[in-house]
Image 1 (cartoon, chains in turn blue, cyan):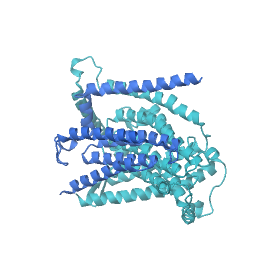
Image 2: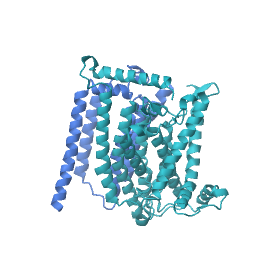
Image 3: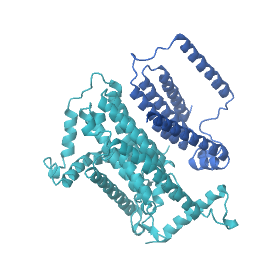
Image 4: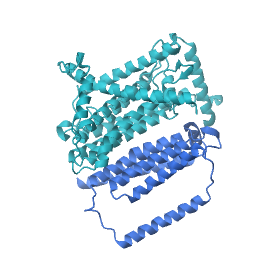
Length: 171
Length: 381
């Protein structure tokens, strides 16, 4: 086993372990912190696949912005054992069924995945670098890229509209 | 793996850590001296000549104080909070190019730990995760003032990061690269083709936005809402004592040092200085590093100057400035820059020959860049 394979295996194990801790830890703030750690480890996996841009954007967007907001809300809510809503058995059953269905879909999707060695890339070492990514985004995938940006603007406008409406009611 | 490269990088990393910590320690003294100067006092002068041993005395005092953890604090998070603050502060220095390459021991040594081609995004990422130290420390203290501070710090960071990112995009548009080394090299010298080469002269509005956002991200006055003494009794480190509190304070000064270095690298040419083409080799490298540190020192002084001159913002004013002023200004600036860059690249030309496909447009930019570097190497000023 080459050294890069050992690193990849260790990283994968760490990622899965910290992702498991997100659901297993009892305290919500601890859960979010494990989720942040998971995002950092996923970024490390990206670096190993030579996708530096994706790795750093993952940290900027998820660990840097979205998770800060998550943590922000959870700190304000001040959740603890005493005021935690009790989940009934039916709720627990429904949650396990939903999660189980998701697992089946994921396994089915990954069943046909092709296993490539970690080191070898089809387009050489520069595959995931930002120049090539930009070229692809603005030539081959320009339509999906621009469409998703319209989607984001719609979501933003919607959020602004909702908050404005609420304010008028208060007034 | 090249062993020489490994040793070189390890030496560079250790050196950077030592320099960052040493500079941060002496910035505490400088801050008190600057404050004293602005307020017509003498400042600390008992420990050593001009108070030069004061940082050692302060550090020693912090180490010998009682290390106290509040009863209802989350012990683990309380301990790692200051460590995270310090760790993220130290990590940022990895992508900053401190000078031109040095020839030593028969090797061409780059004065940069990692020349990644996404250097500027790395700095953005670290400046946004740096707030975790404050958030975790503030929450784990189990104190309402600390919690307020944590929440203020995080919302302030998110608000100012947007404007900062857009200001950075204009710099990236000007230099056509995300690598800090290439951004600095694009500002070679001081004067070229009848205009200044430094980004400050090309992007004055972008610089102002970036500078304000940097001061805000550093949690320095007038943006120090997170540790606002009069309302929050120093906020996130209210419950901290001994060297844990010292870590928070030190991390702030490391951030100040690195933040000033980033400003001078992005907008003031980094290690470039006027008439640099008259020097070469190691002389150029040493002068370049000196020039970089002089610029960094200047910005550290300016940020301290602002701290001791301006009063603190009210919180709604702070949010209003970030969202309603800086973001629109930087977006307009970015659009204008993008149009200007596209115009300069000939994308709006009516001549059929100049109309380029997106794929070949990149080639043209590359060709332009080569021409630019050719010009820079031939024209001496």
